[in-house]
Amino acid sequence: MKRKAPLTASIAAALLAAGLIAAAPFASASTAATLPNGAPDIAVADVKAQLANLQTIANNNGGNRYTGRSGYRASVDHVKSEMTALGFTVSEQSFSTSAGTSYNVLAELPGTDTSKVIMLGGHLDSVSSGPGINDNGTGSASLLAVAKAFKAARPTPGVTVRFGWWGAEELGILGSRAYVSSLSSAEKTRIKAYLNFDMTGSPNPGYFVYNDDTNGIALRNLLVQGFTALNVQTEYVDVDGRSDHGSFYNVGIPTGGTFSGAEGYKTSAQAAKWGGTANAAFDPCYHRSCDNSNNINDTSLDRHADVISYALWNLTGTGSTPTPTPTGTGTGTPTSSPTPSPTGGTCQAVTNGTDVAIPDAGAAVTSSITISGCNRNASATTKVTVTIPHTYRGDLRIDLVGPNGTTYRLKTENSSDSAANVNTTYTVNVSAQAANGTWKLKAQDMYSYDTGKIDSWTLAV
Ligand code: PHE
Ligand code: ZN
Ligand code: ZN
Ligand code: CA
Image 1 (cartoon, rainbow, N blue to C red):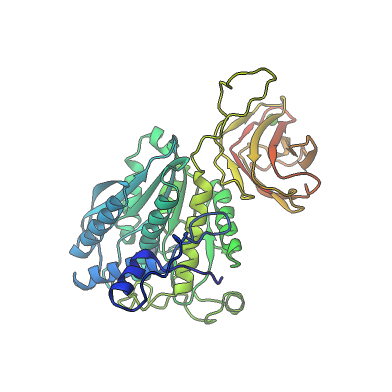
Image 2: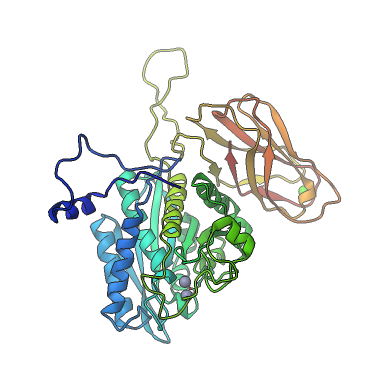
């Protein structure tokens, strides 16, 4: 996607100081570019500047950033100082490994609702054989650039945002596992989503998304939506817990991630779709000394960083409290405030992750999602993604109820369908009504014995 990215202030200042651009070019303050959902467009130059810092750290420390070596410690210090300067609350966690002590870095920005935490992370360590610039300088640097742009655009998010840079992933996903096992069950419950970024700038790139278990379907759909907004086709890949998201889904936290490919080979169908070289590795320098600053595809780096920004924006709301609207006929000041709804006021997908138990052979239950600021009708291909754990899914009848009260049947009960769980996306033509308003997912258990709940659902109008 071609975009007009203004020169970032720091680059402009440097060029100005060097006499390379003329002074006083700006008639008014420039506004940062945004993605289609209003999220900050990440300047790839910001990501590359952080990659260069990690390369310098490796150069100054024996050529790597491996666990137990000075290059890893310097990487930790660098991330801590960057995030502290941005105004995040930063902490460090240490844990031991066979190669020596390692460290995780955590950085947090509190939201108006601190009962929910959205987490993003990636590993900061390299293998011993090289500087680890694509694996995983890219994820690490992208998170730094996203943190900076996000904080500037949304200093008080609707929910708490926490970033994690993990140690010793290359020794067996040790850092994220140490972090998750240090959390109380209440702290685990606060984490509503974990998004993982490990290798996003592969020189012969792919655009893969993963979720690895059904709890992460809505997150994966959101990542796909981000790439779609950039006109980039994606493929789902089952990475089978090969990175830090595994530590989170092991304890039931919904996870998703993006990935540009490692040692695997690009097929000719993938080369036709994404460009690059067929029958060659996505990253020929994977885990090798040549995984340096030259081992990066800038377009891939930019797109993946933009998708991180896109997803984080959708998951964190604005945090502002809407002005109460009086509904009665009397005079005076309204006494209750509507709950802020975590949407950016566009047509973006919205998720309700509050659990609703579905009583056995009982009354229908509903879960609501309110769309606002989407000034068109809902589409003919509206997507309803549901995560409903149930011990016998044939018991379930599921409907979508539109703002005008029309009911659309998504699934009919079927007493002979004994499989568990409904984790799927329904496409439904609801173009007869406006997108704005309150939509309900309605679930009813029709037959006695087995039970379940609405775990979460996502509506993309
Ligand atoms: N975690 C792997 C590594 O660091 C790479 C990888 C990332 C594999 C994402 C699959 C998915 O070596
Ligand atoms: Zn690796
Ligand atoms: Zn990696
Ligand atoms: Ca039942």
